[in-house]
Length: 348
Image (cartoon, rainbow, N blue to C red):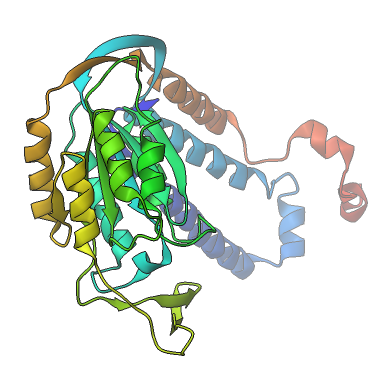
C-alpha cells in the first residue's frame, strides 16, 4: 500500500482542535445554564434532552473529518504482483555491533555513525539489491538480499550492541556468512561493505577474504572510529554509569585499527575507506559502484495500484448524514426502557 498525497495527513491535527473546541463549548454551556436555573429544575424544563448525544454527534464529525483526510491522502493498494527485470549489484552490509562500537570518539558513537553511513549509501542506490549482517563474537543474518530499501532501513535501525550475546569482533564469520547471501543462480556482481573499528578477535580473516574473492565477492572496508580511541561506556537506560575496565582496574581504550581492514580489502580486490566524514564515504562508494558492471536480475514488486479514496469519502459522507439527522433529544425506545429510573424521579 502507498499513500499518494501524504502532505494532507497534516489535516489530522484538526481533530484535537475540534475536540478542544467542543470541550470549551461544553464548559461554557454548563456555566451559562447554571446561571439560568439549578440542574434539578433544568431536568424538569427539558426532560427529553440527552446528555450523551451531543458528544456522539461530535464523534461522528471527528470520524467524518478523518475519513475526508484519508480520502485526500488517497491510499493505493497494489492488486498485482509482477516480476520485473532490473539491473544492479548485490550489496551486503556487515555492521560491527560489538561493545567497542559504543565508543564515542566519533559522534554520536561508532555504531550510530556506521548506521548513518549505511543509510546514506542505501539512499543513493538505484536498482541494486541490499542485505544486512550484524556481527560481534559471531555473525547474524539481519536482512536477506532484497530491493526493499524501506525494510533495509527499518532493520538497520534495530541494530544495537545487545543483539548478539557473544562479544568480540569476528569479521571472518561475517565474511563467511555473506557468501551464502548471494544468489548463485542469477550470477550477479557481488559487493560487501564491512563497517568496523577493525578490532578482530576471530583470526583467519585473510583466508576468508581470499575465499570471498574467489567466489566473486569484492569487499570494501569502512573504518569507523579514531586511532586516538576512546573508552567504552557502560550505560543504563541510555545514561553512562561507568566505563569498561580491564583486570587491573584500568579504563579500556578502544582504537580504530585500519591495518586489518586494509588487509581484508586488499585480499578481496576492494579498498579501505576512512568512515569519519559521511560525504566523502558516500562519494567514494558511488565512484566504486560505477566501476562495477551491472547485472540483470529479476525482482517481484506490486503493480497496478488502485485508488481507495472513495471508501473513506463515502464513509465520511455517511457519518455526516447521520450527524445531521441525529437529534439531541433522547431516543424514544431507550427512554421507554427507563434504564436510569427516570420516570420515578420525574413523578411519572
